[in-house]
Length: 292
Image (tube, rainbow, N blue to C red; front, side, top):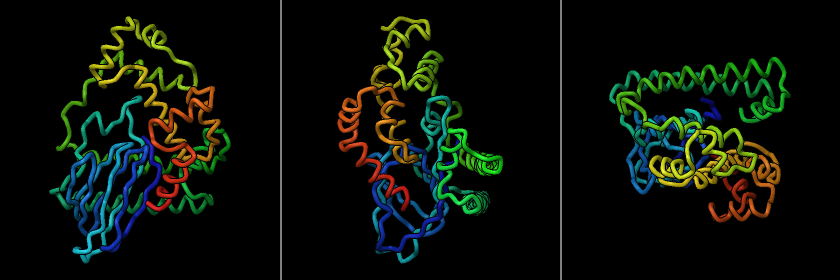
């Protein structure tokens, strides 16, 4: 559970929010105005008092609405929410758009969001950095001071409190039990995450969970509808996109970090899956992330 950024946005009627997909979970608290958001080929009307949950790597599009004279205002929270290697919002099947009936509790969440926003901005200004990801990158490189560590812990603790209130508000709309995942699948997925920078073969995965290769293929098909190696390729691309958007790590180093010793092979795989090069992806989505 990790906060990446939180921003308040205001759009005039003639302004669209745009079409984009982030490699993180995106949550919107709608504060005013009305818009139509299209996600996974379905369109939802969203207005004040609604919560919108956009799963990672999911394209959303919000067009301008000249018929609504009110400013379209919302708070957006970008975060990573995972149970092991699995996405929390997918496991509990969070609805895309929800009209919250208890507006008192919704307002309490809005107030808590502004507190989180204010404190996050205060700490970033105090440390002279633009994004939390910069501080986290320094932490991973063991290059943070005691003050910076304390600041990062403070921000994340506020986010945990915020998410607790958000989850309580959403709980009546969620599955009573999360999507059931075979423990052997969880173990195999975690193994991929931990060894992503290495060459992984299906035999390695099968031995790690003590089943045959054919049985492992069957379990992955049953759970995800794809083979273990297809899952690994998707996991590598997801991790690549996170690094491209959130860091300045050179692309050749990213390729090695996710298990590609040959950068040409990495480049071909990325273009085949995304339709553009890793360099173009970083430029396009980094610019949009800075704006939205």
